[in-house]
View 1 (spheres, one colour):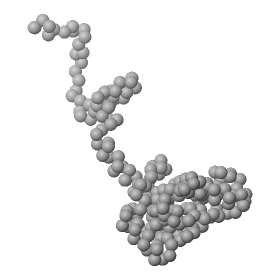
View 2 (cartoon, rainbow, N blue to C red; view 1 turned 180 degrees about the vertical axis):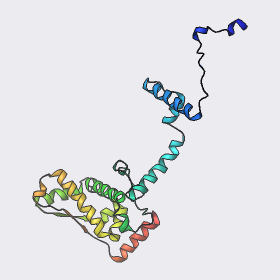
View 3 (spheres, rainbow, N blue to C red; view 1 turned 120 degrees about the vertical axis):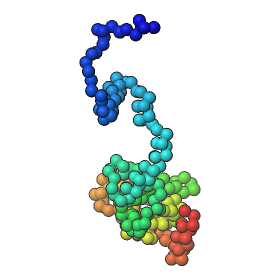
View 4 (spheres, one colour; view 1 turned 60 degrees about the vertical axis):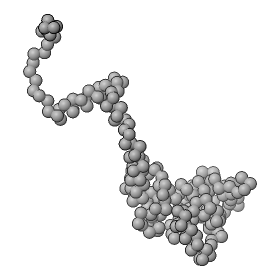
Length: 218
């Protein structure tokens, strides 16, 4: 109906505007989005910014990239907390090189710390917590970890140990000292170092069998 197509001239803006470029339009839309978010308004396309179906597929890839960067020491501290799930995948490095990298080294330390704190015997006793307690009661500076126990619980660490003994024992010693000082903060007055000694090491032939089993069953 023609009479409905008439507008009140007082409400019309008769100023002439130049056509906006694509870049200007995108900038204007972003400004509107910011304003809406500040006002608590979330538009449909903003929800897509927070979640996308591809996020589920991208997350494993992101974790893998972070793990690789962590292994090479290329990530920031915040990303270092990402664990390396496949610690045995040395990504072409020798084991000695691998265990010296900050990512794998951190993961090894975390796994060994958990092993010392949680490993229990068939009576439910925490084996290494008790060993550490007895060590401190006797003012000693070392305790033993049985290789079969380590291999049963943390087979990757057990596999790395004979391949890089000095590097692995250095990590084990650092972890042991952290645990001791967390329980006995003043124990550093007794000794400045805590050492982990490995007992019941397999013979060379048994070690070869262990390595073979590691590769077969991994």
